[in-house]
Length: 311
Length: 309
Image 1 (spheres, each protein chain N blue to C red):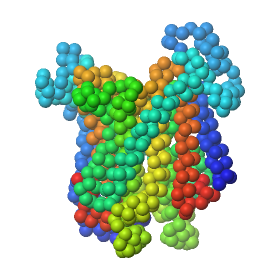
Image 2: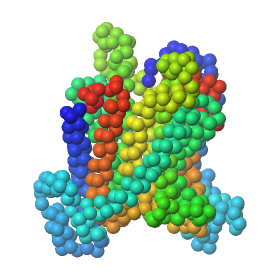
Image 3: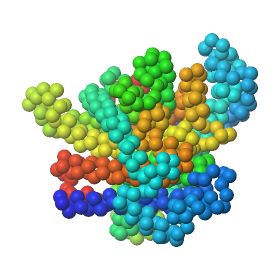
Image 4: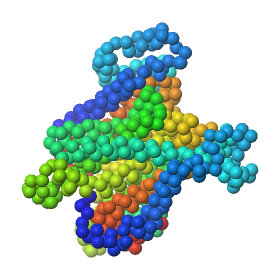
């Protein structure tokens, strides 16, 4: 929340830049690796996936994973009720799990930040009016309302992405407003105003730099929420629809075979869990790394443990 | 206090009305309720009949006004699926949800506070590391998935609990725990963080210097400060459990509450029943918000009633 000070800059130089700092922190490294794996899976799914995720093979239905009796190396994580390869479906499922948060968080982030800037910079009645709407939206029953909207409008990639962004844009608006308000009170902003800098210049040169790090951290954190929401909505049948692939949707299908073929729910769910865990770890590390105050608190509190999450 | 309550109440009514207006706009203007409710092979006559029956042939503003006026009187129309007032259906299914939410929330808050206090007392210690890892898993694992994995493991594998449905206390254990898991995580994080802050304050250091025992310091001095932060987040968590988690967990465990009912209503294209569930949940959410605000104001003398908006 504090403007980047000279101290943190010199510290960064001393410890060898962002990349080295990530490599040195096991939790951040894990998060980055998970994210890299996800991006790779999404981009190169047809190359990485061993088989065609939609190819049915009724002779090879409900085959167990490789470690179980009857499993084979051909279908490492087994097959589903139509004989489709579970591993290949998980690799392809990364595409939706990555694009939905990308689209939703971008939409919500851009809109929310714009609204927050407007409220924070204009102040007065504009601010009061906007924040009243934001507060009201925070009291909405989120998931239930999303379900209702999707049931009526019809679930699809875009309705899902928009409904999910409608659920989170207020978070960006509220944080941006708070940051703008505190930045405006900083002496260097007052000084810039005194020497006659234009509002646009003050906004871009003096206030915006303070927003980047916290908003970026928030965006990472919110993508984890979006992945979970997408998975839950797809699981409930109101998110991604077949033949599109989603981990949550695969869990929903596997649910009918929970007694006979538990691997159908275990592995797609595990994929969601690892993705969300990785993103949460990265967000946690970013929050500390971007905020000198938070960093000091954490290091002071846990002197010999650079990261409490490494255990 | 009286004026403050009145102000908060009117805000709450405004929130509920705006929720209903959003639902109305979405269902009547963006969506086509008749098309959703009727089967594919329905004729134009079927369509006109249902429209007239639901009053959808009237001007849209008249519909909205009637709709809000009826909702204020707790009349949301008849459920298409059950053919009786939707409110009756919701109120009938409400007690199981309240039971489940109460169980899950109590589990989440109690375990969360214990984990938070213990790990906040010795940040960086092994208890703290284990707790923070556990907490992180709690907020990262998808709830519906944990629910299913628990069924595979505890019901199918070990045979300890029934797989789904309701009845005695044994039916409540799995859904309650699953519902409360994310709450454990977030409550623990907040309690831990404020615990660390509180233990570093001057009055706690003074108390230590006076020779007050560690247990007393944690229980009396630090808990008091940490409690305020915990209560605020607990209110948010309760809302999340009620408006989100309950729908998912009830569906996984076929728990006969309003969340499961909402999903059944959606499957049967019963928009009216879904609206009734949303309405009731919205009322509960704003009520919790008011209670949290009041508790917060009473606990923290630094917050004045007139300053809270």
